[in-house]
Amino acid sequence: MGIAEFRTPGMGGGRTRLSPAETFLRADARENRHRILDTARHLFAAKGIDIPMVAIAREAKVGLATLYRAEGTAP
Image 1 (spheres, rainbow, N blue to C red):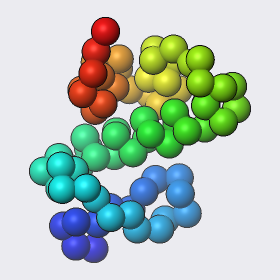
Image 2 (cartoon, rainbow, N blue to C red; image 1 turned 180 degrees about the vertical axis):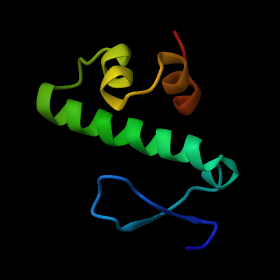
Image 3 (cartoon, one colour; image 1 turned 30 degrees about the vertical axis):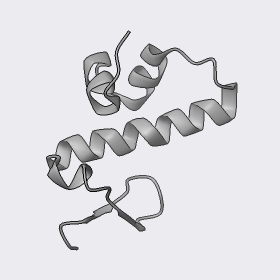
């Protein structure tokens, strides 16, 4: 696996190209980011878009600060 590829957890083991910004993330930060995005997609599909950020963080098993750090925005 090259530096610009990451095996996405929960997505059948397929490889996903990383964005240029993701290539500079530590492996655990990349994993958290992918887990957050996968969880958010799942919750949005199941319950609509009115999901609190804290619910996404809880379901993804990351802290709220980690979620905001991964997405770059905070209230």
